Amino acid sequence: MKRPIVAGTLAALTAISMVWTAPAHADVDTDFADALHGYGIYGQRDFNAWLAKITCKRLTTGVDADASASAVFLSRNLAPGSSTEQIWQFLGAAIPRYCPPHTPALIVMAQEEV
Amino acid sequence: MNIYISRWAGRALLMVSTVACAAGALVAPQAGADATDDYPIPHRQIETHCDAEQYLAAARDTSPIYFERYMIDKSNRPPEIQQMAVDRIHWFYSLDAAGRRQYSEDTATNIYYEQVATRWGNWAKVFFNNKGVVARATDVCADYPPADMTVWNWPVPH
Image 1: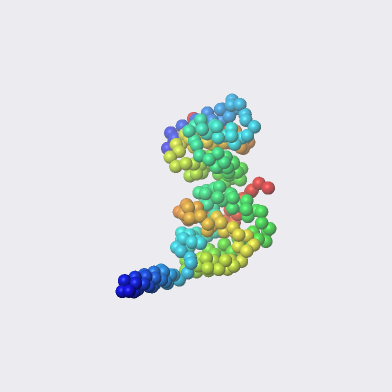
Image 2: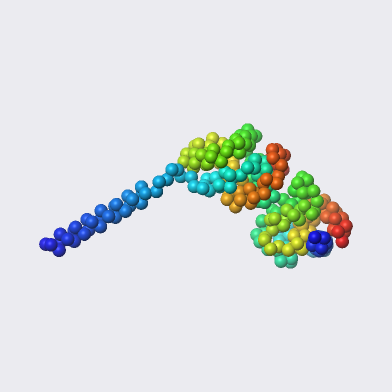
């Protein structure tokens, strides 16, 4: 059980670092969709953007206590067949774009797992 | 002449049998009401033992965008209408399956039966309108705490 989490958090770290290095577009949703396509995550752009925003809201309100809970939430709502790595890549791409204040917590968690 | 008679007799017979078939089609089903097993209220909602808050918390996890839309819609209603909706859904869950089935039938056969709907058409959308949403939420709603009113306090953008 530990291995998927480690692989996942590494994927999240990579996704976060790519946010910092990628040129920013004016539209966050487009930027986010482009990033997801790079991970092989498709689906409706608006759906994914909304899901990312809700993921942020759940962290902010405490419905999800931490990034692991976010990953469980996403695993239920991303397309069936999404890999653990893709779930964490989604999270790593979503948090810096839609709720940057939660980014440090995600990095700390990823580093602890690694 | 005989040919004419038999032709007209044949046509008359055809018309009679056509009318008889049409009438038979109209009266044959012994329908008691317009409600079906899943309409207007999905049968999983009628049979669940969860309360409104358990169901809503489950829907927040299993159909988050549908839940979000409902909460945004709710937040755009006057406070008294929002309260009416909460009270009414509590009343619904207080009914047993037979009572819920009767309510489903009443709302299917009389568009004015549900008074909350006259003030807010989609007042129970997350609870009744989508079979898939209901199925996913009722699958897991027993895992959530009952009567947790905090689930209604979902922040939405204004």
